[in-house]
Image (tube, rainbow, N blue to C red; front, top):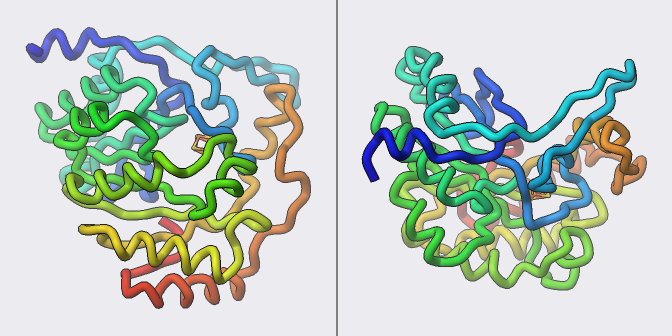
Length: 265
Ligand code: SF4
């Protein structure tokens, strides 16, 4: 496809954040694509789960629509504004969501345009897609940040709404084909915060070819206000955060796998 045709590919986003330093190397712009096949109870972007636009109503009564149809070219115009920061810091574009794999043509257009502009690319993903989709996208992704949340299919289903079979099978495929791969584990109380659960995930990650590191992402409640704003109750209730001491112990367990590990991403 010619460059101008890629610019015209349309997709749906619900946010764009500049100057992020947590979602790939350097200073990055994060583009949040709308729609996700999962329903993680702890999700901090519930307004991104449905593909249809969602209205958030603030405590002050003001309303905001999450969900905007936009061309890849327009997104890249915004992303390109910070090109000098990417060049200095090794940063670039990160696609997040939602799950960017649900809009594969739009994601591919964004990633390809970024490369044509000399901007490196990262994605935050569950890896839940067809092999064909993954094979199309992976050559245009410099850094894959792959969530692996649980090794037990039933628990995965109970807390996320789908089992983990496809995630685990695709993780091996992604590991073989990704340029750079970090496994990220959202570490969630009552879901996967036992030593056995973290040990099982980190052993699996270490068994894959090419995983460079494993990051434990501590549970937080930063998205909890958004649930009220979209008329839902927060699924995690008032479950307390994991202590620093607990996270350090789980880090030690993860490090038994031999992978470089850290808390946070
Ligand atoms: S995969 Fe991510 S965006 Fe989708 S429901 Fe889970 S936390 Fe939310």
